Amino acid sequence: MEDHRVSRFPSLAARLTRRAAGAGAALLLATALAAPARAQTVPVRIGYIPIIGAAPVVVADKQGWLKDAGLAPAFTVFESGPNMIQALASGTIDVYVAGVAPLAVARSKGIDVKVVAATAIEEMTFVASPKLAPFFEGGKPAAEAFKAFKAATGKPARLATQPPGSVPETTLRHWLERVTKTDKADVEIVPMGIDATQQALLAGAVDGATIREPADTIVMERNPAIKLIALGGAMFPTQPGTVIGVSGAFLAKHPKAVQALVDANIRAIDFIKKDPAAAAPLIGTVLGKGIVSDETIKKALASPATKLEADPRVIIEPTRQMQAFQLSIGTLDKELPLDGLFDTTFYETAAKAR
Image (tube, rainbow, N blue to C red; front, side):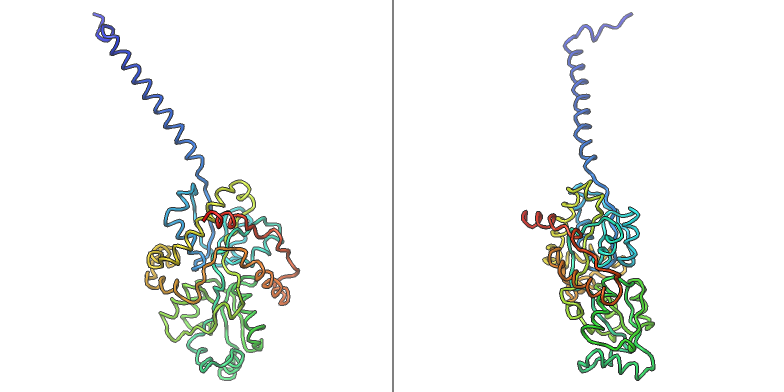
């Protein structure tokens, strides 16, 4: 027999139909609303070197500020800025977080990149090994200390730094040649990566090094006989340090994402300065690779070698001066125009909104 139970109650059938239609419409609406949210998520590949200068970007990620702004970051660690340039050139990364000096060279070779923010200045320091440090006692000038070391050991002091053209190498040479006027015969510069420099210093394989936080704090905690000899400002005044560089292709396609990144950088620097104790665990998980204590990272943040600075305008003239020095020592073959390297509009927009 034919079942007419539903047909006998047309109002119930109508209600069921309306409910089904309403559920379908709600599902379609939810899907429509979700689709733009997915579309707004911008993948961004960020290359960085493991130093305190990269801490603002790390904090912005760990606090969820990048995700909240619609960014989906993926991080890759590099040993130096020059090493990262190849990745930038090949399109492997979109964002470069390292020293500014290699970027001018990159632009001269046709790599489209813009500096949209700074993260730190005057980062580089010079530290002496237990073998070299005693020669600086009593405030002895560096040139005399290096000369005395060579006379005592029969060898020039081996000084570790990063590759030629990097900010660390340029800063070290500026300090030796222009500031301390050290005889070139009394020192030997040995280029190597960040981790290798730290390990060589602790192992006594080199006599001194240019390093940045948190390496300063780490090596002096592990061996108190390692001594801090010169801060960044003494080595190169207003030393241009770590910056946020963005590939031209990414910037053209995602200007709102770049603005969000610059906004987050400023917010992170403010947070680190106001609450280093809360920032330290976030930073340590990345820069300390989970094996450096939060207390060590907190000490690194309080170090006189840590000078966080978001404003890219602060380093434009010092970058020009650094380039002029690189020309004089032959690191650069020709003067590279800085016009177009810096795009300060993102920082200026963020500063106005604060």
